[in-house]
Length: 209
Image 1 (cartoon, rainbow, N blue to C red):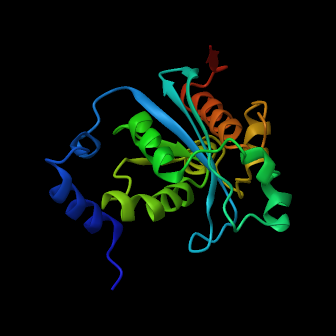
Image 2: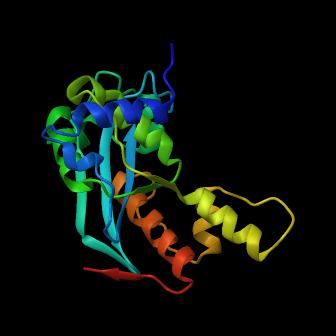
Image 3: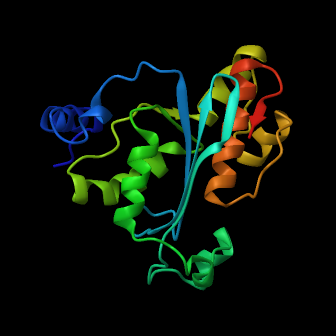
């Protein structure tokens, strides 16, 4: 039986509220958001492996590019020439990659209980949960913010009628945001963060170092 995500999250919160990761299940009261992206071997969650994880924090109108996470994992056996065509990541590029368990520890410490922003963010969360649950017994409980939904709602509100093109490159172009190292986890995470700041604040985002 498939357990709905909301019910599963409530069950996990009850189970882990007094455990070592209890902070993750507390309501977030700060003003930061984490933009997250994963590069994987496939778009099929059931078969895919994670190659790299990128994340950057947003505070107000600032994308804190110096406060970031840039993780490469050891190359999985499922890394094929076909997947390389998409993300351009070769096994040699991952020669200094870390083990998945270490990557998950670093990711949880970086995100905390902050909201998670992404482009098709549910895919990234499902990918992480696939490996997180067997290790910790829970998935990411964080609030998720989908960039394309934010963009769609704002464009529809300002310009009633017609379809809205939600492709990554189109959104970046319409918002006059440069695409930073497309199809790299950190590059996509930073680009999404810049687009989100532009959408929410209606002015040129501040890219801080």
